[in-house]
Amino acid sequence: MDFLPEGLKELGIPAEFKEKLDSYIKTLLEFNAKFDLINSDSYDETAVKHILDSLSAYPELKKLAAKYEKPEFADIGSGAGLPGIPLAIVFPEIHFTLVERMEKRCGFLNEVKARLNLANVTIEENQAERLEQKRFDICVFRAFRPLEKKMTHVLRRILKDGGILAAYKAKKDKIEEEMQALGKNMPEYEVLPLTVPFLTENPIDGEIRERNLVLIKK
Image (tube, rainbow, N blue to C red; front, top):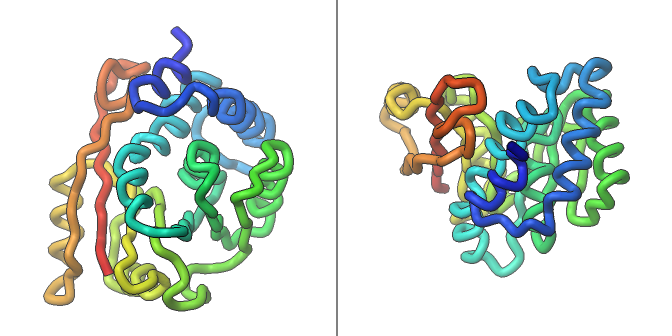
């Protein structure tokens, strides 16, 4: 099965973006050993666990972006460009800033930007703590580590008033535990279940996983 086009179809993403996504996957695999980018070494696994996983929030982010005249998106701790690069590919009309603290990974991200001709992407070598306040409308990030008070405060600070943090997370019960641990200053939030083709259903490796998007409002 050709997982990438089938997955794009399931998510309602136009097939016109397949070529750039395909190029991105191949670039990831080409540079993976040198830069330690992802924990996948096959095309199909990368397509499902990283590209389709990143794009699973496409329907929700499309709704959110429509609320802003010219939304400014940021991918915080972008690493290999996930989820920022796939999202920038399928939202060519939206500007994305990929924030990454490691110089060598910024080098990789600049290589991807050049190869894929992503005019709507800016690479910034920086840390979240040093970013200008009230700068972005929507910040996305893959948050496989627990959210904690300090980082949640830092991330909300760089949002414009009315902005939203969109965190890719796994199990809902763990999310609830993390948010409760923030204590009395816990921000308003919403947990939206995500469907990742061949990961949360009909899994490529037989192991069904859970994915959710946590929206934290400022």
